[in-house]
Every structure is written in C-alpha cells, then in structure tokens.
Length: 297
Image (cartoon, rainbow, N blue to C red; front, top):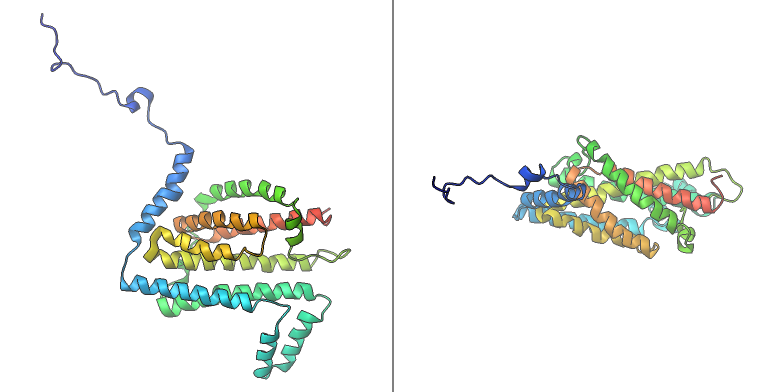
C-alpha cells in the first residue's frame, strides 16, 4: 500500500479559534476601539473639505473668540461699571442703583458677585452659539450635543471616570492651593449653609451645562464637519486656558478631561452625561473643601 503523499494529505485548519475557542476581545481593547478608534474613523469619514465647511469652521472660531472675550471682561461682579452705565444710558437708573448696591454694598455682596459671574457665563456660553446655529447655520440646536436618545448605555463609563477622579480630588483637597481656591462660595462663619450655598450650587451647575454645550457641543460638533476627530483638540486649547487661574494640577487635568469629554460627545452626540460628570466632580471638590473647613458635620 502506497504511503500518503503531501499532496493527498488533508491538513485540518488549526486556526486559533478552533484550538483555543473564539478570540475574546479584552475590555481595554473594546473600550479603546469603541471610544477612540471607531470615533476617530467615523468623525474623519464624515469630515469634508469644502467652501461650506470652511465657512462653518471660521464662523465657529470667531463666535468662540467673541463669546470668551465677553465672558472674560464682563463677568467681574466686583467691577460692574459697564452694566451700571449701560442701564443708566437706557433710562433704567433705579435698576442700575440696585445692581450697584447689591454687588458692592450689600452684606451678601460676595454671593451676589458669584451669582453675577454665573449669569454672565450662562448668557455668553449659550446665546452666541444658539444665535449662530439658528440664524447663520440654519440648523437645529439639538444636533450640537443636546441629544438624549442612546446615551444611557454609556453611563457605566462615566461612572468609572468619576470613580477615578474622586480619590484624586480627595488627595488634592489636602493641599493649601486647593483649600485657598475652594469652595468658590465661602459661607460666613457661624451662618447656615441654607439657602445661599444651595442657590449658588444651582447656578454653578447650570453654568457647567452651559460650558459643556459651548465647548463639547457647539465647538466639537461645529468643527467636526471640517476637522473630523481633530475638532476635539481644537476645542481643548481654549478650554484648558480657562483653568489658568487655578492650581496647576487642575489645569493639567483639564487637558485630559477635555479630550475625554470631547471624545465621548462625538461618540454619543450628547453633552448631558459629560455635564453630569462635570457637576459631580465640582460638587465633590466643594464637599471636600467644606469638610476641611469643618462645615459639613
């Protein structure tokens, strides 16, 4: 009987799947693929170089420059001369006087100045982008990061990010620079935390929603049609600069946070979970600061 030759042998397929079972993607690879590789590929595939996308990019950048200039120069509640003068010019002298007294004379002027800052932030972060989206781009505001449907499957990742940030905040809270900076509103010694601290938190959190809409909504989704994935990094530069008056570790962390939240906004087309994460981190920072002041318990 002839020996079988190499040409007559049937060699079984010894692919890794048949020997070791199906290849299982690790959670690290899955997260990287879902939130980085796929987001980058999808955003870049949608990006188009055209006169229309060039125009849109220029309008977004100019709107951001004007809005950030306004909120930088108009938000100082300790120097409301511009608004007082403007109100008097249009015949609202009594309103101007009450505003002046509330910000500079009142016993609650510290809180009033913070509230003034928050309101200016809300207006400058929201009004210019909305006007541009509706009147210049002729698009729907909800398409700039205000989507709700489909975001909840990603809640676990946001929870993990908060779980990473919380212990780092607790550790940073023991530093002198942290305790000098936070909380923004210092309740007077011996006073109740209600209602001023809680009212401040409400305004502060609304400001974070507006901030997320401005940077991760208007900027990211407004620039992505032209820049693709690079829109995230174009957004991170001005966002990081907002943190220059804060402790350096926080400013450095803002670079990482901006990239992460920008990526997640591109993935989910929504800012809402990012705003919830931002608010949770800010609340944790305030609670740590109040704990060091002996005001929590």
